[in-house]
Image (tube, rainbow, N blue to C red; front, side, top):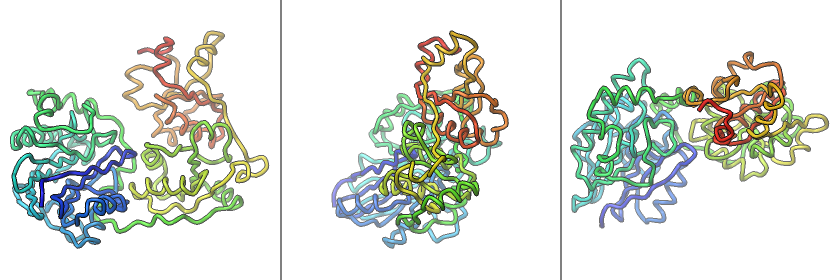
Length: 455
């Protein structure tokens, strides 16, 4: 038995982290994602057994793999005793002390991100330094967002979050390492972000929003003002996690041929092309939606798809489809209804290949200098629009586009966002709806440099 060690399991597409804390023989796993083969690979590499699984809270942004992991290893599954769940667990409460090998786990109530949120301070036999697994409470430079439980309680929960962060800072030694679950691009974060891969209580005391602002009212006002839109699929995650999710199936989905693909498109199913935005703009099967496989793929697919809509994937390779499946199970889309792999022209058939033009902000400038210029649609969030935008541009945030298609001008539309990713999705949705679109595949910073904006 040795000192406390921590291995990080990154889930960059959701902006989250899971952790394996161990003493060389036994391990505690904190906030695991559903694709548990990644956790098992870490346990095998370390040569340790999983004796305990800790959940900091009932997650809003992903389906937990905690129950399945605990069942597989016959490990103790620790969840707040105040959470109403439909599975057996060890009900934890503030002040509890748990033992795992030589590790000691202190349970600390840290409400705010959720009502029943817990943090866990873990120490080895020597007692110091400790590690605190702070979930969605104390993040690097900030705290978790406080409007997910009930928007009407945001002020109340923000005040609770403020006091929770300060409680951790008061209870724990300065050299305690801080390991949050959120804060690496997750929409569960709020406020500013200090970035970085590691931190301590002492470092957080120097720059964390909740710890450097001594005026609680000022903190609440600033945090609430900074809360932005979050993915619609969050509405489904809490109930799924309270029910307890079982094992996943990542076997290849049912193959779909060209005829079946077109029937699904005609029926209004979501047929999602995983290729990058340049390839999709160049040519794609008419009626499909382009959401490039990358770090934000599952976030935006889950945000936009009407929940429960049949889903078929189009990929360049079986590996690309498998990668998409892995991302989707994390947000509760357990099995695509099928997948097609191959050449777009072959899948489309005669007359069904579509495409649209890509442009830059320099092209917008040239068009405007010679006349009124094109109709520009900005699909960034409201807060981004308010910070600066192109005069005379229309504005519909991407997450609202499907509900507001009737508001899109019936003329050629040039679509932009901050980097081109969201605009590419919007362009595909507009193309699917029959609009003539141009994708502005450019960084918004270029528009600012060209003097096109109100920034």
